Length: 190
Image (tube, rainbow, N blue to C red; front, top):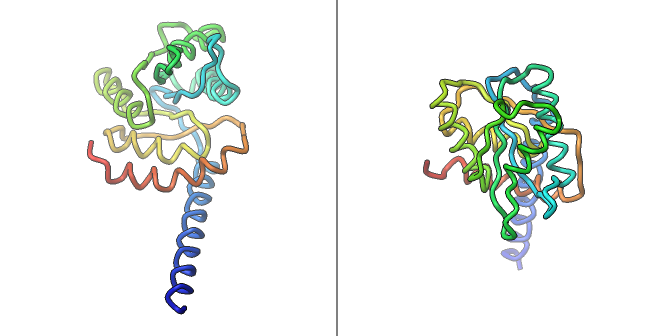
C-alpha cells in the first residue's frame, strides 16, 4: 500500500510541476516586450478552404501589420504549410497582409513552415542570406518562448516576441503542451 501512495504522490507532483511550468512559460511571454527588428516572423495557423485565415491567424496577422505600420520591422516573413486539402497557409497570409497595405516586396513567403522548428530553420537561413540579425516572432503568447528558443538554436542572436490579444479555451491545452515541446526543442539535434 505505501508504494501505491508514493506513486500517486509522485504523479501528482509531476502534474503540478508540469502545470506550473506551463503557467510560468505563458506568463514570461505575456510580460515580454517586443523590440524593433529587421524582420517579423509570423507563424501560420488554420486557413479556411476559401483562403481566409481563422480568427487566431487573423489576429496574428493584424499584430504583424501593426508592427510593420509602427516601423518595428522592415520585412514580414509569413510561414506556414499546405494542409491536406491543398490550402496554402503562407500564400493566404501573404494575400491578407497585401490587402492590409503591406507592399508585396516587403513580405517573404515560407511555404515550407509546417511547424515551429521548420519555420525557425527556414527563417534563420533567410536571415543569414540577407545579413539580417534581429527578429520579432509573432504568434500566440504561450508559444513565444518556444518560437524564440527555436530561432536562437538556429543562430538568430536577437529575438523578441509579439502576440495578439486573442484567447480561446484550447489555449489551456496549448499551455500544457508547451512544456514538453520546449524540452524537446532543447535536446533536438539541428
